[in-house]
Length: 540
Image 1 (cartoon, one colour):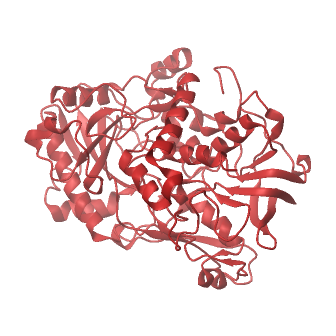
Image 2 (spheres, one colour; image 1 turned 60 degrees about the vertical axis):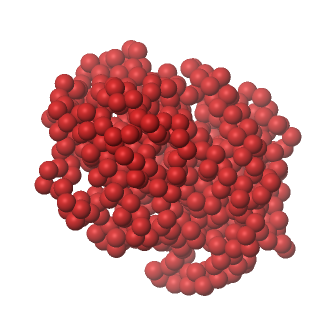
Image 3 (cartoon, helix red, strand yellow; image 1 turned 45 degrees about the vertical axis):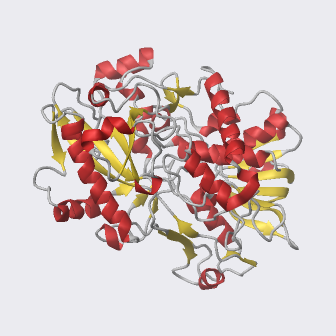
């Protein structure tokens, strides 16, 4: 594991440095790919090649926690966009996704949230005895112990604006100072993947001193397609600048995320027949479930101006920068979403403190992400006053979309990807989001008693009626970039991936990332995705 002074492994610089054959080739160095590579390297009985389309993240936008939104749309991001969403005022939504060693863990909010037993039960019901709650929970316990031993998980200080909200929730007996590291009713600080004031991305997992010769990491290497033989995968075709190579492998694991994984599979001729034919891609293996079922979490911010707080915007004050440089403390350590909460529709504000410890009805639950910023303006625009925001998210949305490849011009050599999250495609999601927003506004004023200290700036007093709030919701809701479920695993014949993460019908080919989850977890998915990789390592 990493230490304060250690560095991640150097990636190879040319395809010519690679061997022609490996036991396992892993595509994508995000939460799943890097974790899987580490698990196999620790075991040390096979050669592993980890391919990542992006480079290393040595700059401040990924290393300094508070800067990560500045990475969106830059060199560390695939910069995906959705198609126009009819239920979101016809907007195309930016869909950040990490293109870098560490994947999206290099540009996310660093939150470590372990799934509830209800979420693990869903896995068990979809996949059978390979995924009992007990087996999954043991893997999560092992991961947490390892990360805590390496001091990769932390509970840093809260910004004063957020601290005010926590104290109010504690006064109302709906909060604790313990970490919110698994979903429960109430408010608590989020545990974060941070060490010594800096981000810990999954790239840090690659720094292993044992059996390091068995792992080769190649960054800035884009996989164009899988190589398939009679009934099985034989390797990958990969580009590095102007170089191209075909690398043989006994096993290939696709860990490119819920957008990237179906894209790679379909580019290789694996997927829905009609989609492949329309994109002029030869159908090698028809699997109708590839790219289907995409889910994501939408977030809608409620923004407050707070009396007696501290302004949080860029550029940071010189004192904040000096404090971070000398002590690795202060606002630059903020992951922005410092404080979290879970509630459910139908809760009575007057009895809110009585619900602690009770089971949550997840289809009716919603989550808070509380930041010390003006959510709509940070980091692009300065703010004159101290602010905080409460991001409201449905835990288990019902809407599902799809990822498809297509060609604008049948003569072009490449193809484009069409991403339709279908936000609010199920109208129940829209109705429930409105209810959760209005419930939250009342809770901040009444249950937390902040009405005299915090003034709502957005949606604001001009938007109190349901119709007015609904218009704002359609115009300003955005992604939490928790894309899942586009290549679902399970025993059902329609699932393209089986319970041991093998792509059905092609020997030696596996899928391991958030795309295989039956539905989006009730909260931030990084811990769940690392758990998938740890389980797969025992089966390869």
